[in-house]
Structure formats: C-alpha cells, structure tokens
Length: 354
Image (cartoon, rainbow, N blue to C red; front, side, top):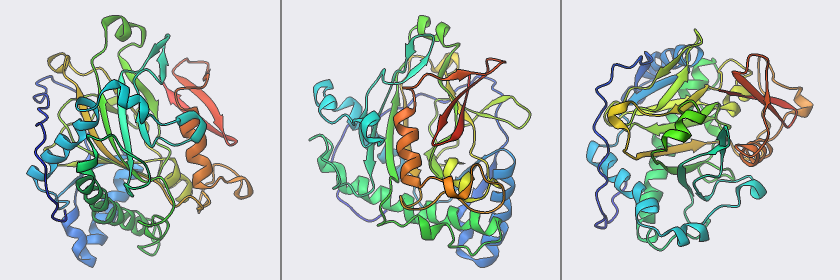
C-alpha cells in the first residue's frame, strides 16, 4: 500500500475463531506471488480454472498486504458503524431502489429475508474514486487510506485474478483486465459491512438464514477473511459448506457478469450467510470487500453458452442497476420444492436459494 499518514482510531477487536466442528469447503489456495512469472501464471491459471468450475471459491495468499496492514483496514472499516451517529448515517444513506446503486449506507432492516423478518446488517460502500460522493465527517480524514486500499485491491489483486481467469479460457491474458479499467465508469467499490446479532424469534422465523443463497451481480468479489464463521457455499453435491477463516487471506468468488462474459464456462457462485456457531454468537461480524464490475458500457455476452440472446444482452450498468434495485425488495416466486425462489431481471431468471 502506498505510504499514507495513519490517524489514531479505535482498534476493532474481532471474535476469537470458532472451536466448532464445522463442515468446511475444501478450497484451492492461490499463491498470488507466483503471478510474477509466465510459468507461475500458467500454473495458477489451471488452479483457478479448476476451482471456478468446481467449488466456485478459492483463497488467495501472498497478495502483498501485511498482517498489520490488514488489521488496520478492519479498524478503518469499523468507523462508519461504531463512529458515526444514526442521524448522520441516515444523511448518507443511499437511495438504493431508485438509483440502482449501493453508494453510501445500506441501513439495517432494508432487505426482507423471510417470514416478515428484515436484515440486521449495515454496510457502507465507497467508490474507488472517493471524491464521487460526500462522506460522514468521521470518515473524511481516513479517505486517503481507503483510496490507497481500493487501488491496491483493484490493481494488485483484481487485475492478476482477471488475467488468470482469461488464461484459463485460453484468451489473451488482458481480455478481462481491459474491461475493468481503474479509471473507467463502473461500480467497482469497497464495502465495509457489519452484521449484528439477531433475536431468537428472528432466527426461528428465518431458519437461521441471514442472507438467502444468491449470486453476486458483478464479476469478481474479494472478501478479506475474518474469523466469524457465517459464510457458506452451495457445493456441487447440493450441500451447504462453511468457509474457513485463514489469517490475512482473501476469499474470492465470481458473479453474474463473469458468467455472462465467459459464456457460462465460469459459474456465478451461490453462497449465503447464516447464524454463526454458538461460541461466536453475540459478536458483531465485520467484513471488508471489493465488489468488482466490468465497465458500465460492456455488453454482457461472450463465448460458449449464453443466458440470453446477444441482442437482448444487458450492459453491465443495466444489469447492476436492476439487480441492486430489486434485491430484498421484490416478491419472489417459490418453486415447487420451496428451496428455490425466482425473479426475472432484464428477461433473465435470477434464483435465490432458501
């Protein structure tokens, strides 16, 4: 990370790792330092291709951020929640349904989960160009750090991953990099996200599900690993498996846009968030993400198996606005088995897994 002045802020103390015996997914571990050589990229491209056509998630290690730097960014990430008043949060809340954009706050109880229960999660979303929006006064002195962190994620993590994904398709390695420009018009952004404990009544009504199984609408999601176990993926055998915390690792999955762009070769990964194991209940769960999307003007069509006719393919802007506006706000149609609910976005069926 470029050198920036670090202000003194409170330290966020996360929950201790769980001791529960959980059924963890067996995920590939990608050593990003190997992308420095042609041979290393070729080897990693095969690993990434196999991971993304198998489990759909992988870990990244040796990404270039030190453990103290990662710890610091979680301290920064907590400021929009613990350091900002509820009144000021409302001032900077995004008009999500109207704009199709998450920029700013998504406040608690905005999404309907199930059984009349709404979410207990806040997030604050910051475009990598931090000057695009005004921010709460408590966050403004930290913007140089956040901007440097966004740049690091985009150029030092996202772009190498996009190169590996292209090589896995035997495409020129900058195929996807070229439509994920750092200065382009798109909604690639940093998200700070905080889950709060729920009541027993809420847990019962939602069967302990905090966010239903879903796919992300963008291309690549990068999650900075944190210790509260709650994230699960839908494995190829139909079982939900937990994602294990690894210190200073990243957890990577793909979204709808990459499924479109790869012609269905890479699948958008179905994942959900559930109540943590018993020894972590009562703690907040603080998350740090980069949600990446192709440039807004990119047509979401490419390659092998298409989800819609080329003429009907949405642009990235159309897709993200429609998915963002609808999420947690629309009436979903239950399928026969009750485990899957559907909505139609821009003529494409979007599934949610309960």
